[in-house]
Image 1 (cartoon, rainbow, N blue to C red):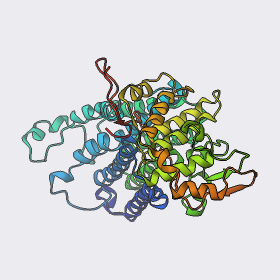
Image 2: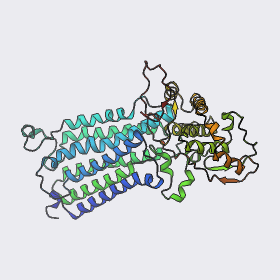
Image 3: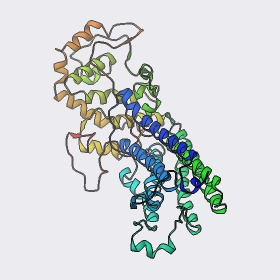
Image 4: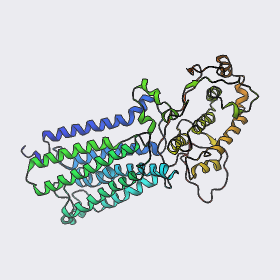
Amino acid sequence: MGSCGKNGGCPSDYIAVAISLLCFILLLIKATLPFLVHKVPRPKGSGFWIPVIQVFASLNLLLSIVMSINFLKFKKKHWWQSCYLWAVWVEGPLGFGLLLSCRIVQAFQLYYIFVKRRLPPIRSYVFLPTIVLPWIAGAACFPVNPPSSVLVSVLHKKKPLNERCHLGTRWIIPVVLLHTTYVAALVGFTVAIRHIEFRFHELKDLWRGILVSTSSVGLWVTAYILNEIHDDIEWLQVTSRFLLLIMASILVLAFFSMSSSQPLLSKMSLRKREATEFETMGRALGIPDSGLLLQREPAPDIDPNEPLDKLLLNKGFRQSFMAFADSCLAGESVHFYDEVHELAKIPVDDPVRRIYMARHIMRSATMEVNISHRNRQEILTTPDLAHPDLFNNALNELLQLMKMKNLAKDYWSSMFFKKLRDDGTGSNGHELEVVTGWNYSPRLSCVHGEDDPFHEEHPSKSSAHDTNTQDVGQQ
């Protein structure tokens, strides 16, 4: 091996770098391909930026290991090539620490939403930087200035990293404690939600991340001890850094999961022809008679003189009216009604499925409903996301809004009603048919796993006023 054990550039080093590059490419495919295949709109809030941060942290972790442990043989002439920068800052607060913190945030959200049955008390964009602070504080204790810096010369005798970019003995214990503390926090939240019967493998993905992260920390500690004891054995250095990079590559793949941010999408097949099996959240949750398939039921003819809320109970009318409202760019209220109607089919003693559906209604990315500030805050501050009357006030308000817009009056003279009448949707029969001819497409669920589904700040004590027709889906 010559001097490659110390200076890098061994064949095994290049193999490890190639494998890590392949793993990162697979991670990018895993993160983006489902959106490209299913044409899902980009999610809002933490449902989008937490997975993006995970990808960013994964890249930092892999790059930091390559740059700090001499995988590639090159002369370090510039300050940005310093092992202090890569081993301390990039690998810590911007790499492994950030990656663990993202999963802790997701586990924290799942705990509050499914165990406490309410929205988390702190927004994720506040919670994530807060739990990354210990990593930043720890990294601040390490000198990371350019080699020419006077400060580094003064602190040279106390620097925590040796010439091989290895931690000194007195630093290894606090660093290992920091890593294990965050793994333990992730274990704590995971244990707290282990009794929940998740439908999209959220718990399984968390346990997988815990197993791989624990193995990574264990391998890193073992490699450190062996290298410090047998620092003159080159093959040991080459083998240990090869295993470290391979383990980190496995970690970034195993840690990334869409089940918390995009649960329905994580369950869909990437093959388009199989995507229709779980095209809507209602069908994925097993809600009876949910989705595009309509069951012909014995029903009276549609009477325009009936109240709108009674007419909407007929699924054939509801989907025809929904298609008409979509054509008028006013379909969000009918979509909302349709999904609340689906939610009502889930038994009250099945809180997990009710919470999934409630989150979907509150967080759908493709539609926005206009409700008053009071009704929105009533939903945001609910002590029980599975409550059967959670959306009642908002639904009544939207029904009044639909009547004020004269949607029903315009519908009776539209081609949509004529087609409904000609097709005889209300006639007798029990076979299933696929709705065709209407420009109707159900909302693909984008359950983001965010703490605040409405992208709104939680109400303060002074926010008692009403603001009519506020956008539910916007900041």
